[in-house]
Image 1 (cartoon, one colour):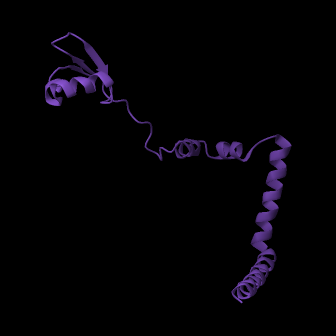
Image 2 (cartoon, rainbow, N blue to C red):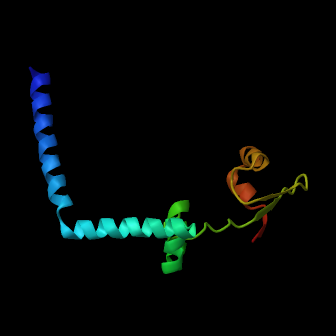
Image 3 (cartoon, rainbow, N blue to C red):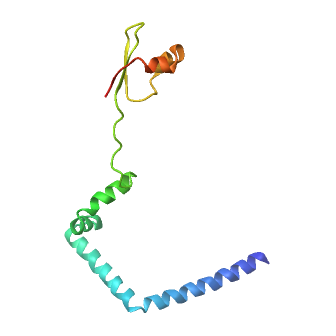
Amino acid sequence: MAVLSDYLKMEKELEELQARLKAMESNESFKNELEFKSKLEALLEQYGKKPSDVIDILDPQGSLNRATKATGNSGQGTRRKRKLKVYKNPHTGDVIETRGGNHKELKAWKEQHGSDTVEGWLVDNQ
């Protein structure tokens, strides 16, 4: 019986939605928007343009906002580069240049000599 009651409920919802659609189709503002959309699409086709071309023409500054949203930066711009750190091992004379702490040899130094000691070997921090 649950299946039958679900079916009847959906059938009633469908009838309500169809009534709302009919009401919307008779609405003058809807008719105007539909006419505008069809004329705009015909115009775009006539000139071989895309909707994004029209947006760029009408709102040139808006393309910058759309580009940041598309890349996921959400208006924050690009991420700045980390500072280059140069470490020099006083025991061996080896030099490591890195922008992050995920350097294999630097990690080995820190395990062997301790993190505080290796940070003391920092020669240049650009």
